[in-house]
Image 1: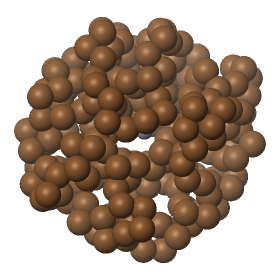
Image 2: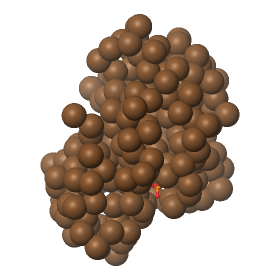
Image 3: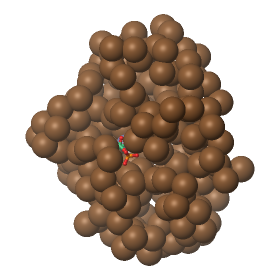
Length: 214
Ligand code: DX5
Ligand code: ZN
C-alpha cells in the first residue's frame, strides 16, 4: 500500500500540534528543514522538531535541505527524528557517507535525496545501506509548486536500481503531489508520497490523505 507523508511546511505553524493530530491517518510526518543556503528559503530547525517529538508518536521523516548535513545529524537524532534525508548535492561523497554512518550510530533510518538535476545513478554508492531514496519532483525550497513530469523517468530509474540492489528500500517523491499526479508517481515506482498543499490546503485533512492513497 502507498504511504502518505504530509509535509507540515503547508500546515499552520501557530497550530502545528492541531494539524499533526488531524494527520494521524497518515504514515509519516514530513518535516522540511531549510537553511537559506542550500535552498533560498528558511524554515524550521532542531528546537521545533524537539517540540513536535513531544506531541506525537508518529514517525518523523525529516528532510534536510541544508549544506554539509553531517554537522547536524547528531542534533536531529537527539531531537527525535526517526529518519533523516540528506541531499547528495549538499556535500562531498565522503561527507555524505560520514553523515549516513552517524545516522547508523544513532539507530536512525537513512535516506538520500536527489534534486531534479541529479541522475538516478548517483545513489549507487549508497543504495545497499539506505532505507529510503527521495526523488524531488520540484526544485526544493517551496511548497505549492507544479509537479515536474520530467522526473517520472528518474523515479523509474531509481525504482530499477532499488529492485536490483535493495528491494526493501522505500522510494519517496516530494513536490507537486496531488490526486492527479500521485497515480503517475506510483505507476513510475514511488511508494511514499509527500504532500503539503494538497493535504493542509484541504478543508478535510483525513479525506485528503485518503484521496492521495488512491
Ligand atoms: C519542497 C519541500 C516539500 C514541500 C512540498 O522543497 O521539500 O516537502 O512541502 O509541498 P507541495 O506538496 O505543496 O508541493
Ligand atoms: Zn520535503
